[in-house]
Every structure is written in structure tokens, then in C-alpha cells.
Length: 533
Image 1: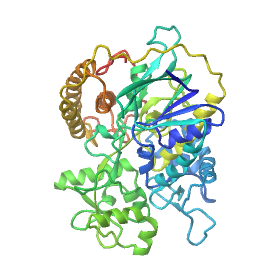
Image 2: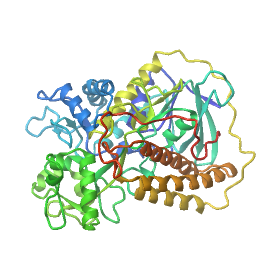
Image 3: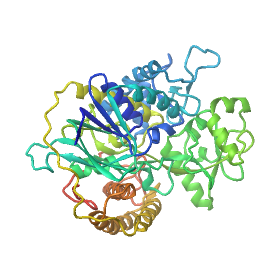
Image 4: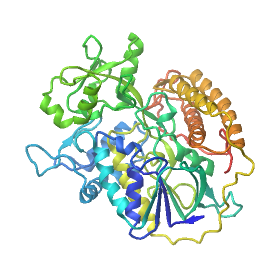
């Protein structure tokens, strides 16, 4: 058993922010299941929203966030994040993040505008903001003597006092599989932070990296935490449509800088769906694209920014320009083929404004958490901001507490399992899950589709549970087990919402209910393979 003061599971911006805010005072373990920069934060293109301009205000940013969230945001959480936005961006600047500066006023940051924002307030590093932030912070993380980084370690389950028979419930650590030598390790700490990101890989088409498999939500649920608003899956309107362009996002900023959505014949269609046209929030734009594609039998629609100069495009969107060129698309002359894809989970593990979950000693930050900030639809570029603000909030709360002594933790027991005999079962189940989630629990939903999805999930869950109980764990099995739990929570949440609001649109309940109410799931029902390690 290895002991630390704090365990952080996940190496995105939320995990980095928490680690760097703790490390001067605590011994921190940072676990990541692949490489340090393989998470979704590194893929973020658009930027980080904050009140930086003289013509902007906290009230404006709060209002835009509340409008996008379709009545379901918690205003206290929104104000907490927005009021700390300026300081979060200053913290990144102090760390040396190379944000883009204004061409005419080089001493000022360049601010772009994205869908749902009433002002230019998105700070960015060209069109690769996440990579610029993560690359900069990674150097600080790796050089800090109090931060231990373990790559290729996937968390299996949280260790809680309740599972060990103690009367007082508390998180005591985590079991994790070293995927290099297939050995399960026991890590103990008085405080554990989930910073595991989202669950986009539960869907067939997603902008998320392969590591986004809902691990944190599933582990927290199995440990006894409540989850909220899991039905609100944000589908990004514009993912590059090309057989060789896996998960490549076309940032919101392309539309913010004047990009127009067109049908194959060149006709614009967004003005017919919303008066804000291309600058409407993501849920509106994604549904409009989905409607036009289904109505006309299209494989994709087109995002046209050809009216901008090549110099402008190269300066603002070099990453997109290069990737499209590699695929034979010249965005200075050709519109970009795009489709919606699963992008962001607005719900997650319920937390308070200190990032605390229902279990003492367990925190959740970033996309894995449901803080109340995003409501029924996340406003563009609020996610990176949330990572920093709540990562620092979790660290602040931990630093104010005394570390409790830890009991000896049992080692992982593999005495009753064997090596898997047919790994193909895992890949088949994974493919089936992602396909029916896309077909039945996508942008537009019906009661019948949700019932079909739940039935399939129950059957898959039984197979996966049997497999998990009889064979040694592997990276793919752990991820599949977590995905089926996450899918189960998404579907059950969607079935409880008898209205259409934000990202959840139901043909059976097309109207918005008068009162906005969170969907909160709490045991005792057991999702597939609810089994202690």
C-alpha cells in the first residue's frame, strides 16, 4: 500500500489545477490511465471564457450562462465561477501560458466570441488553447518535488470505509491497474479528487479522446454518490466529417468569427431555426443540423468561412487549416463538411462549491462533476474555466482540513479469477453499446427509443458483470464496465425528464415544463455489475 496526502485521478486541466494548488503543502499522487496529455483538455480548441474587456461585466457573463443553461443553472455556482474567471486567467498567464494577443493592440489579449456569448470574452491560444495550457502546466507538474505522476494507471474502484465495515463513511483511496505489467496497486490517502473527464466514448460519434469513458461517474456511483442531470449530453454541432478525421473538432470560434452553415447547394439554414443563426447556443445549432440532415437524407452539412482572407484564417485557425489541408480540404476555398458529435457531459457527480461529493474525503472537479454551472446546456468555453476554479476550490478546502489517520487497506484480491479466454466479447459489447446509444439516446429522443436502450444496457450489463466476476481486470474491461454504468445513468435520467429542455429533446414531451428541476439519481437500485473490488 502506498500512502499520499491527496490522490488525483485524471491529468486534464482540472487535475493539473488541483495538483499545483496543493503541492506546496501536500504530497500529491497524480494518476492518469494513459499519457499525461491524453485527456480532453489537451484537445480544447476554442478557449477559456472570462470577463477581461472593459465593455464586459460579470453580470453579462452570468446572464449568458443562465440563458444557455435553459433555466437549470444554479446561480450561486454560476456567479462563483464567473467572479473567479479573471483571476483564473491571470493564474494561467503567471504560469506562462502563451495566449494570443490582439494584432492592433499587442499589449492586450485577443478576445474572440463564441455561440451564446453576448460579448467577446474568450481568451485563446490561436485554435489550440487546451494544448497550450496543458503543455505549459505539465512542465510545472513534472518539476514539482511533491507531485508523483503515474502514467498508464487506470483506476478500478474507490476504497471507502463503508466497504471495509467501518461505521463512518469516508473515501480512503483507490485500486488502480498498472497497464504496463497488469498488476493492481493499492493507493491510500485521506483525500481523493476525481478529475476523470467525461463519457463521450459511450457514443459512436464523439469529439472526445479514447480515454473519455465515464470512469469517475461510474466509480463515484458505485461508492454511493448521487449523480445529477446525466441526460444532458452536449452534441457539438461541428465535428469534421471525413473517414480519416477521427474525432476532429471544428471550434465554435469559426462560427464566432463569421463562419456560415450551409446545405450542399450552398443555402444557409440557421436563420430559419433561430434568430441568432450560427451564433445560437450549441443545442439549438446541433438540433438544426440534425433536422436538416434527417429531412434531406444528408451525410453532413457545410461550414463556410471562405469569405475570410487566407491570412486571417491562418492566423486564427492554423490547426484546423493544417488538418483540413492534410485531408484535401482548402478552407480558404472549400466549405468544411461537418456533423454533430457527442462532446460534453453537463451532468455528473453532485458537488458543492468546494467540489465536495456526498462522501467525505472525495471531491470531483471538471467534466466529471455536476456543480450547477452548466444547467441543461453548457455555454461555450466555460468548461476550462470551471476546471481551474473548482480545481483550486477543492485544493483550498483540503488545505483547511486536518488529515485523518488511515487504516490498513486490503490488497486487491485475484484469488478467484483467471485470465480472460475471449477478449473479443469486450470489443463486441463496446461496439454494440456505442451504436445503440447513438441511435436511441442521441440528439432527439423518444420514450420507445429510451426503453429499447435500457433493455439492451441491462442485457449487456449482465454479460459484463459475469465477465468481470470471473476474469482478471484489463484496461478495456474496466472502461467497458464504466461505460455501461454511465449509459445506464444517462438513459434512466432521460426517462425521468418529461419535458424538452436544453440538450434533452424528446418527441414525446416537446414542451418545456414550467418549473426547472434537476434530475437526481440516488441508490438503492443497482446498475449493471454493482460489485465491490
